[in-house]
Amino acid sequence: MWNGDALDLDAYLAHLGYEGDRSPTLQTLRELHRAHVLSVRWENLDAVLRGDVPLDLATLQSKMIGNARGGYCFEHVSLYAAALERLGFTFFAVLGRIRMGSPKLLPTTHAMLIVDIDGRRWLSDTGFGASPLEPIEMKADGTGTATTDGVWAYRLRRGEVTPGAEGWTLYQPAREGESDDTGDGWMARHTFTLDPQYPVDFRTANHFIATSSHSPFSYRPFIQRVLPDRLHLLDNRTLTTVRPGADGGPKVRELEPEEVPKVLSDVFGIDLTPKDATLLLTKLV
Image 1: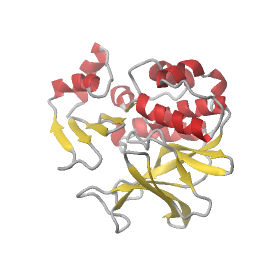
Image 2: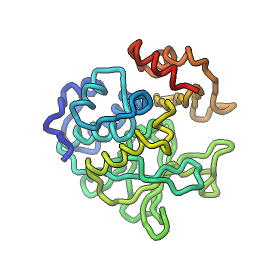
Image 3: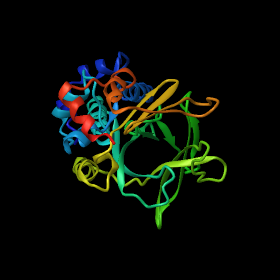
Image 4: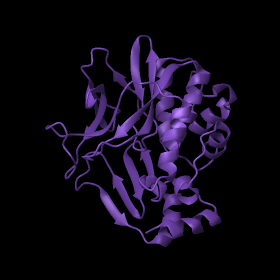
């Protein structure tokens, strides 16, 4: 299904710096999830620069393994799914609706994996950018999970996610000025149902994200890098650094266009070719 047999698994694991066990256990899943989030960059530069984001495994391996480039959720999850399939995990993909304070019902444009291990189900959300550093358990009784990955806190709850549709909502603590969707300080980041999705479904949603004028990812550079103690975000020319529990809130700086390629390299570890760096400058506003 996910072309795991065509994946260069050794190269992928080496890129992650993973040298642990390869059996499909919860411990392996936790370590792989964390290593993927910390090692593979999140960026939408191909959509902005070229209006085309291929999802075939050969392209994903060339771009994201052994290279200082990354991708967004459909690329991350397609690559990650190939690895889990190769390692023998039982899982399926789902699509979710981003919330992040939006009052509108948004399309299903976020990809995730649901992994089943020993009768327990786990949300493995590696493609959000500011992704959790660990899988989050989806408790069978639907009571939800409040958890931390050691740095960031999350709440996962089951309930109605769109009119008449039962699903799950992943929450994060709301910062000052952000939407408090629960009344006790939590903002919904995305919702999802458990309808299995397949590579063909990824291609459909990916086409919208990469090409539609209604998708901000098609025309505005957006880069994220999560580290064990902080999160860096670049939205067009606005650089934001968030530290959990930091006094004074996020640090925000507006960059000059000419600074952006160097910041991509120094802060995000993304080295553009001279041609792409020049092209990027024409896309910044």
